[in-house]
Length: 122
Image 1: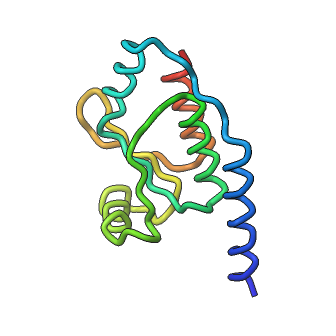
Image 2: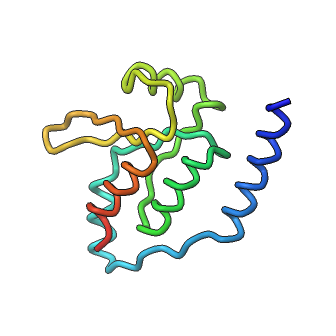
Image 3: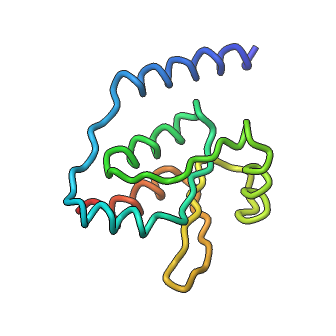
């Protein structure tokens, strides 16, 4: 019974996301290049119709951040990366590197969005 409900809700979430896509932050070409370079090695692990993943993708769009997005339900390699690196089977998950080159696996959409806002709202 839950599978059809999730399917229908997922389609509604994706439709609303497409209809109400946020506008991106406009930066100078140099500032955007700096953001692109900083996030070059970052990855978002997600499920396409997950409302929490949509929340993070919308924040990425608002902040004009482009990074690889891996769908763990469609890509077994992405699922394996998530489990090997992050050790938790949960999405959304943002993998980023700190100043020391250490991979950080960040879960929880609100925490990810706060992190993105603190680092890229300018």
